[in-house]
Image (cartoon, rainbow, N blue to C red; front, side, top):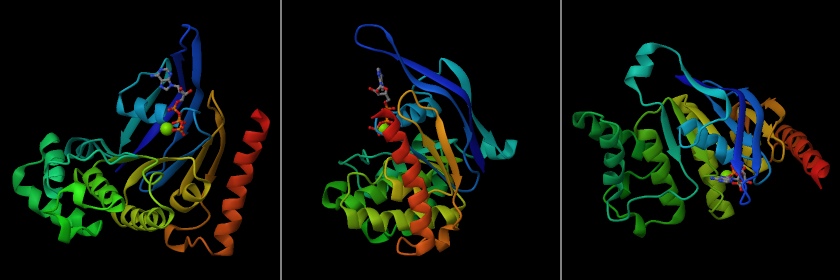
Length: 257
Ligand SMILES: Nc1ncnc2c1ncn2[C@@H]1O[C@H](COP(=O)(O)OP(=O)(O)OP(=O)(O)O)[C@@H](O)[C@H]1O
Ligand SMILES: [Mg+2]
C-alpha cells in the first residue's frame, strides 16, 4: 500500500480583480497508511483544492505532494489513485457492470481479470443483483455504491473521497458510512476522505486532520482512539471523541467570526 505526504503546500488562486487569493498556507501532513484519513475543515477552506492538487488537476505554488508506495512492485502493479465524488458521475447509458469495466479498461487492467474484479467489488458494496441495471433505475444510495465500487475496482493505492455522502438523506448516508468503513478496513485501503461533517470525520477517520478557515493551516491532528470496529455513534467513548473534535472546529469558527 501507500500513503500521501503533503509537505509545506502553498496554493494561490486569482481573485476576479487579479489579486492573489491564498488558499493553502503551508500545509504539511501524512495520511495514514492502511486506513482512512479524514480531512475536516470549514466550507471554502481549500479541502477540494488539496484533492485536486493530489490528482494533478491543480499545481502547487510551493511545497510538494508525494504518493509514497511501500515498494516499487506496488507502484508498478497498481494505479495510484481512485476517486469517489460527491456526485457519482456515472455513465447513465452504461449498465452498472459496464461502468466498472470502463474504469478497468481506462486503467489497462487485462480483460481476463475483469470478471473476478467485478464479482469481488460489486459483492462488497452489495450490488451483485444489480450488475445489469442502468444507473438511472437505481436509488441515490445505490448509485453512490456504484461510485464506490468503481473507485475500488481498479485497486488504487490511495482512494480519494470528496464529501461522498453529503447529498444523501441521513439514513442512507449513515448506512453507507458504516459499509464504507467496513470495506476499507477489510481491504486495508489507504483513503483520504474530505468532509465538513464532524460526526463523519470521527466515525470514518483513523486519523483526522483539521484545517483552519482559508487560508488553510493545520489546526489539529487527531488519532482516533477507537478502532474502526469499536466505533458506535451511540457509545459514550465515541460521543466524547466527537465532542473533542467539534470543540476544536467550533473554536476555529469563533476565531473567524
Ligand atoms: N479555480 C479556481 N479559481 C479561483 N478560485 C478558486 C478556484 N477553485 C477554488 N477557488 C477558491 O478557493 C477556495 C477553496 O475552495 P475549495 O473548493 O477547495 O474549498 P472546500 O474546502 O472544498 O469547500 P467546501 O467544503 O464548500 O467544498 C474558495 O474560496 C474558492 O472560491
Ligand atoms: Mg469541497
